[in-house]
View 1 (cartoon, helix red, strand yellow):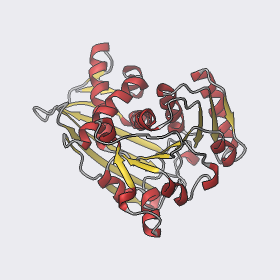
View 2 (tube, rainbow, N blue to C red; view 1 turned 90 degrees about the horizontal axis):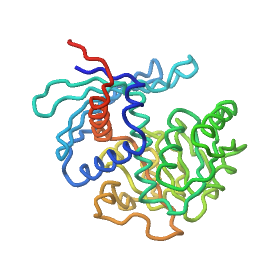
View 3 (cartoon, rainbow, N blue to C red; view 1 turned 135 degrees about the vertical axis):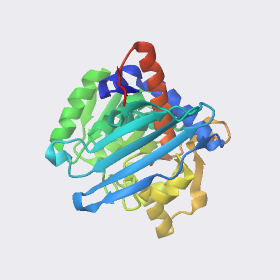
Length: 325
């Protein structure tokens, strides 16, 4: 069994390759070539956390994996990452466990890659300015992914903790050779943007409806429970809404469930799964003026695709440590 550390995963698969793997996974999911049961959630209210178990199988790729991911909201105050995860890759032909991977970095990578796929199909081709809400690990991946598919010339970051935003701006400016500015308010960030990415744990909208210009594309990846809402209801009602998986989104996505409960939208307002667009079954962006919204709650097939690609690349590069259990 191969054990792959965070650094092994990072070295094995760059963002551009992760985007391609996730695009294929979404297409398989939306064309009946994948099995992705609704994830099992263990709520640990005593410690302000949740642990999710996410199995998945991609039939076209013949790949299978299971992820265990924990999100404990008090961790950052203790100097710990918000998210911890492991992924076990299982040989689809025999059921033999083939590898165990650090899933914390992989989760960030595949979530960023999903927004990269959505941005490729939904953002205006000339989009040049990005606004990032949330200066954590996922905020970094969101910017990297958008830059991989659009000619981005500048970025803004807003975080409720100015010090985190300043550190983010300095790091990402150097990493991507891109001017990244700290916004003094949500409005300053959102109003300047062609692409908005929200990567927070907020339970209330992170910007105002009037802050979103015509033609903007939004990647909303932070709200992963029915109670969490990063995107204002009015923006959801105005936007062409694309999701990662219909079953999961209608069970978990507060950004959709809250407007549904309020009567602002109906289920028919959801335009498509992203995989339907990738597969050519439904159109993506159809005009320069429309506002598009990709709402992601995360689907196990993303983990399967990226973990499989990481394992293949790691074997080719001689990465990881072989162990016998």
